[in-house]
Image (cartoon, rainbow, N blue to C red; front, side, top):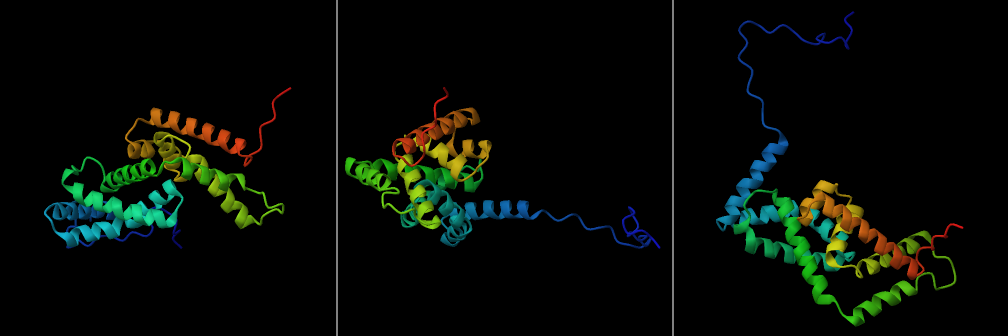
Length: 222
C-alpha cells in the first residue's frame, strides 16, 4: 500500500495531450488591493457609490481605532463620521504611497486630536478627577465587571492628562497592540521616536494612577 505521506504518492501522470496549466490566479490580498485602488480612483472622480463602498469596507477598523483613542462609544461614532467626511474632502490628495487604511487612520488621529484640543477645560479635568477619586470609595469591594470599568475610567482619565503625542503613542502600542513599525507609520514618526514616546506615556500614566490611589505605590528598597 502506498504511504500517503510519501512525497509525490498522490500525484498522477499528466496525459500527453493535457492542456498547458492555467496561469496562477492573483491572491485575494492582491485582488483586494487592486479593488481598493480602483474604488479610490472612482471616488476621486466624484463617484459616490465608490466612496460608499470604501466607507463600508473600512468603517469597523477605523471605529475600533477611534474607540481605543477615546474610550467613549457614542463619541467614537461621531468622530468616525467626521473622519470620513474629512477623508472625502481630502481624497484628491491621497497619493497611494501608503495603504488607504493607513491614510484613513492618520485622518482619524487628526480628528481625535482636534477634539481633544477643543475639549480641554478646567471643568472637564475636575470632573474626570472626581471620577477617579471616587474609585473604590463605596466601602464594599466591587464585583469584577464594575472593578474593571472603574480601572478603564481611571486609565482614560490618566490619558487625558498627557500631551497628545504621548497619548497617541500609548494607545497605538498598548491599547491597540500595533507593532512598532505599524504604530510609527500611523503616527508619522520613526520607530525609535515612537518607543520613547510610548515609554514616557507609560511612566506618566503609572505615576498618575499611583497618585490617585488606583495603583499601589512601589515599595522602596531598603
